[in-house]
Amino acid sequence: MQTDLWPTTGVQFASDEHAAILAGLVAKNTSGVPRAGVLPRHTNALVTARPDMRVNVLPMELVHVKEGARFAALTETIDVAIPNPPSANTQYNIVAYVGTDQQITGIASTSNFVVIPGTPSADPYDPALPDAAIPIARVAVPSTATATNSAGVVITPLHPFTAAAGGTMLFRSTSEMNLWVPADAQLARVMGGSEYVRTAGVWRSRDRVAGVRFDGNTNVNGILVVNNPLLGMTPTWVQVTMGRIVASDLLSQLLSPIVWDTPVGDTTIQIRFRRHDTNAWAANQPVSGYLTAGG
Image (cartoon, rainbow, N blue to C red):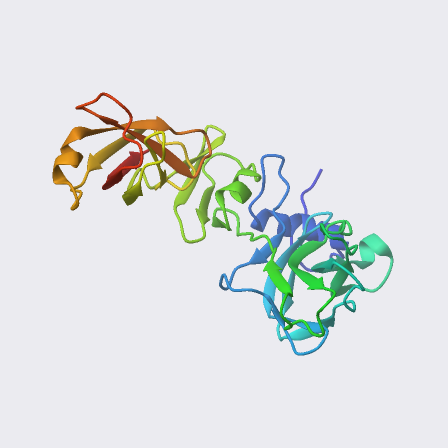
């Protein structure tokens, strides 16, 4: 069997053959499926409000995955209509990119940004999307809205990011990152956070050591909850350095910190403090210091 070579001369390719070739340019999961999404120019919202029942969709480049990978570009801002507000409760509407192709559907090749309406509810939920659609944003519209810039309307970015093969994949959170299962050596970055590398089937922080200052009051059990500086990745070691408590420097010398809880995937670390003088947990006490964690 010969391989497809493109570009070439004098050969007519079907669109799925083009898409199969282009799929090699996109980062994939362990099953070899390219990741659909937006090739990030920036991390700003791609859907914004207007003084009417429409929203603006801003320029972007996307990878649409169906029978391979297809690339699309929105080169100028467009606007799409949002359904009228519900008579009661709130309705979720999803702005999505839907690509259609002559090889698959039998119609002329076209690309569309569409709005998929949800069902009004006191506890609204996202509607189901068409096959291979890429969600761009959720527009939550309450019954009191008169425009998409009305009070109570909430536009939430939903678009997944993608990257070229070998590139660093961008995610909004570690939870989102953990849903994608690429091959080992894939790089990732969480917005506003750390870089990660896929190793032995799990994400490992590339920030091997990170620290955070803490300052607060323990609870009734002598516990203070501190943000995990490794941003959700379980540290292999944690060190706590006590700081000076201005109100009672003597008290800081009487306290002994113990790392109490570092569950897998958690975003916080619990430190429990014991008093040397009474051997009791230091309940409702001011504490300060520095936590260092390594992975």
